[in-house]
Image 1 (cartoon, rainbow, N blue to C red):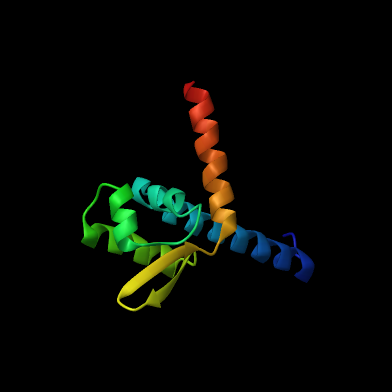
Image 2: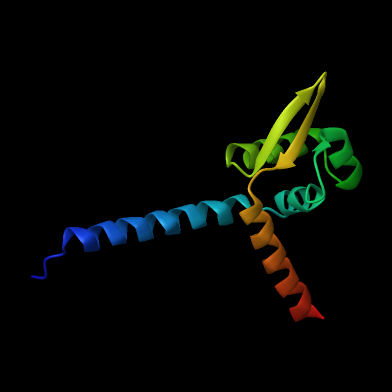
Amino acid sequence: MVQKSPVQDNALTESEEVFEKAAEIFRVMSAPMRLRIISALCNGEKNVGELLAEINTTQPNMSQHLNTLYQAGVLGKRRDGVQIFYRIVNERVVTLCRAVCVQIASDEA
């Protein structure tokens, strides 16, 4: 039987934590609607009305996806009167989205 040292256990735990976080990011980004929202917010914050003008979906569907992205720490929000403005707060997700989408687009060209 091979014994693991505490250092090996810690490395495995850190590695597993990285995989868990990566899987969560991929889960959040697995919906095309959420990718569209991230793309729409790349150039700055927008309110729900502005997002709905760019993305063809219903208001309840948009709100559900915005909430998922907010809960996952991808988006931040601020209230201005009755409007809620959303912005990207996790730039790593944007970088990852761009890398994947550019790769797919270049493969299809």
